Image (cartoon, rainbow, N blue to C red; front, top):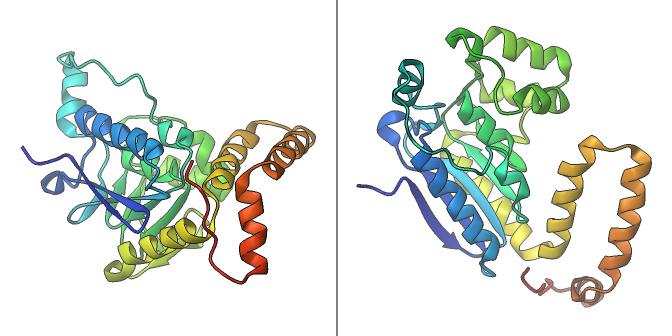
Length: 257
């Protein structure tokens, strides 16, 4: 049996690759468990500074595997679900970058957008697909999409279930960068290497928590928490190293988490 998720570490960047290319990397419980296990390991590994997630072959993730959907429909599905929610990547303290290389549909779109940054190939095909399968906006996508692209655009892609390209996803504000397919993975890795070299792991962990958590709080509450976090950061070695490396005009040498 091939590995469901491939893992490769280089220069502080861990690349995780969904590896069911014959099924456009359709999501199964087994693939999800392996992916989440690798994210947990990455969080504990001091060598990992950033994570890039992509798909093997022509797809990123084409959504839930139809065999799973059929089993759910017939009442024959008997696997124990992973207790970790599909939003689990947002709780990992290291930055996660999705490199959407191809088909990104339904649950696959959810997993792209719960990454911290999203790069896409210009010709990648995106779709929520839900209404065309008799389903609804799943796993918090009705919460995420309006915050990323605005309510009207979110309504468009959710109600229509239409297919749109990575280039249009960028125009709508859904992704950070759009790149030619041939340069997508290297572009995402290059960005991740910049984070690995120049950004404090402790700072990135706190910033990630602030951004995801502050969607639910007021500006005043966010500012109060930021003051507390800033005071705490003054006492970390990362602050001293950040100042010293700037004054000495060299790359910083931040400690791992």
